[in-house]
Length: 363
Image 1 (cartoon, one colour):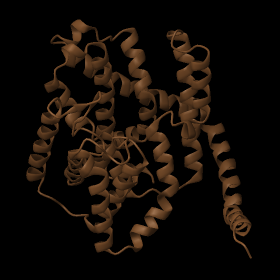
Image 2 (spheres, rainbow, N blue to C red):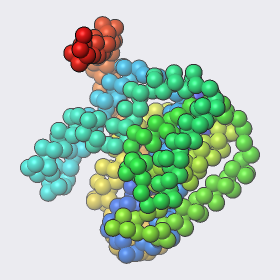
Image 3 (tube, helix red, strand yellow):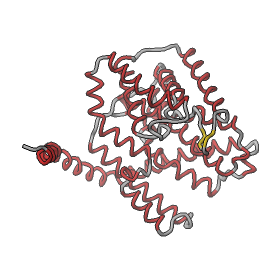
Image 4 (cartoon, one colour):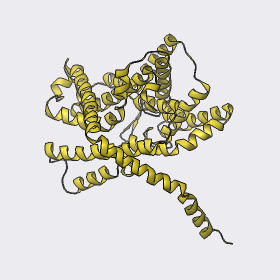
């Protein structure tokens, strides 16, 4: 779907989501360098809101609905492989001690097959979500509202409410997996079909702040067992999911158009792939978070500078890549799309399934 067809308000939320994700990653680097100088209050404030970034992004995908376009999927895969290999090359040049021998070979293999290797958990799960989206869309479209709400309620209870209030969880991934992603996507589709209404922004924002404070309070005050730190600030926490839904409705109520915002939003996925790597480069070269900075008044200005610079560098890098490789990437994606469509039209999967069935069933 072209960005011109989407209101800039939700594209702005998409941009805000990636900023929250970059803040989480930047703050994680600071914690690793000077944990003793970062109190639970600061950690709670940051994690209490920024961990909803991925949830917001998938909620938007569910609201608009994912429609598989093989040409787009191939170009996305090419982009991820390209950036993965570039990251390996730059890491070898700047930090040669990090990649040697088996570690280098592993990174190269992961870079060539990023989906299967789960080099970027979000990307692997997102591709899986895209492949399942035709079935999910049809199921949700045909399902009665009452059954859909019951299904979402059951999913939230098992995979969100229980993990939020109890130490254990079924999926054991803190929401960073395909189960939570499918659940959030289905919630987005349900909002589009049955809950596409306006809300009172003032009340929604008040509830948002209250949940944020609950997340903040949970940091450092919930039990720690076996070295695992339990907190409400997880991707699959019910507080995070409700906060993301409220923020979505708040942004949806704004109506404005901005060509600049829409153009920047096109590069958001590249920022997802590049942000952790760029943060490490920036932090390891010139905007380094030392223990003195982390414990001083300059901490947040330096942290914010890292985040903004990371975002700008990622967007600029993707614009350059798109300009340089536009023609070969377009040709390859068109060729790949024709090959995939020919395989699907030939009914390859059905024929394989029939052969498996015939080989197992006794006639």
